[in-house]
View 1 (cartoon, helix red, strand yellow):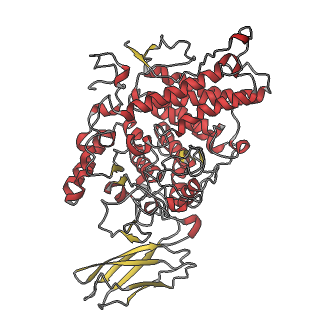
View 2 (tube, helix red, strand yellow; view 1 turned 120 degrees about the vertical axis):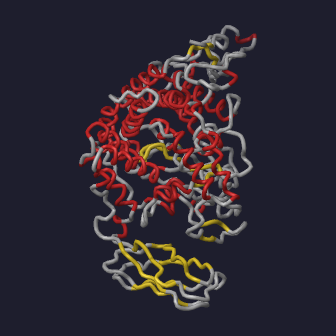
View 3 (cartoon, one colour; view 1 turned 135 degrees about the vertical axis):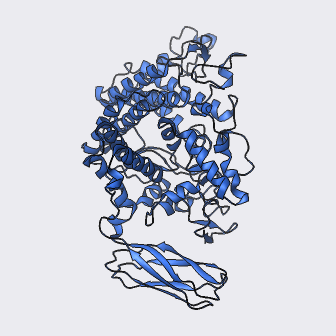
Length: 605
């Protein structure tokens, strides 16, 4: 096994004392581990340092959702000039994003090891001691999980660094790292508090541990370990979350989940674990604001609305995956663009499916004064929706399509189609007569009336060659009992007509065909994961464990090359570059000796 050097944050500090105090045995001007971990408050402060890594711009503060997971079948880096980097899968072991993520994760592990090595020192309540130990154990395991799932064989570090010289540590086989992750997380589950006791999603709770254990086991069941016995364990842990005393449930309003993240509001029934950000870096020294919504939001140069670089675009494949009436689409994928530096919104036409940004993290909802480059928006790590989908996936692999797994997916679909909030809604509007003489500069108004709705649907038109070619629904309305009337009037032009359809009770549920076999239901689950969890930094790992990363990216590239306008064919760059070596990140260059270019599990780098 080749040895590697790993970067750790050494918190070991030695102090100096004056001549007059050379006989003093306790330093008064340093924070040596020998003396620092002496009180409950100091232990909690040290634990905060372990959490702090999560919000680093090298981790969930920016890099993971902006660059490291940009190239998938659901997203792309929306800059045509970006020809190199992890964003377009044209990088090597010297890439700074790769190095800084590796370094940050091992810093987090070092901090956790220091807490765990000193956990018995202070006099304190044993239950509180156990909580600190449990959270530190889990975070150490989670950082190792991020390492092993992205790099394969990595150094497994379970003790604090004692020397700044002896830092060469051999890589541990991935299976052993995963097993240690399971051991640490399982122990942590018995020590940490319930999410109801904590009251918010920023700390590790029993539900968070159980849900992440389901995820870890699913990763182990897939590529590269392919230990299919782990599906049963994933199912068991997911069931603990679903049936546990915390009472987790879906938020009835999909978009509200992400508005809550923007406004520092907690919904622990749905959002089980999230990375905490706070403040805006205006007028204070607090720097825990991140780039959520700033780099992965809707392109906007108006700072009052909320400046966003719009780096993440939605692929046309993702857009087409959503069915008519699925309300998630026009939240997850921005249905509009901003006009210049104004707050004026211009809706995309039905044909404009290549230009759209990720729309989940919208800065307009932030309550604080807006700073150009940093936001207080939290980032989701584990939502109840994910737990339901993991339960369905694991149950299908163990038992085939069953009532429990099918019901889990149908719960998500019922929310997706607005049935909990709005009952039956408008489903489609079909143009029956395009009319003549219409102008896009003076379009007609679409009015939708009748049908017993408690809120009328709204729509706009698309005009081409003087005809109405499409009617685009902008609000699906609420609680229709019959088909409404669609009227197209005003502007110039005459003769256009359209008719509507509405949803019916239960039409959002999966069909018998979709659940007829394990293979059929597996496809449904994979698609639902993409529609529900897009832009939450999970898709790359899902595709890799399913052994679909190369094929799906190559198909996305082929579809874009064949159908995209010339100015958007660059979307295919990641799919054109993808190779088997991209299934794992390369070990950072500074960790390897000269000419040691081929490392176990990192072939090709």
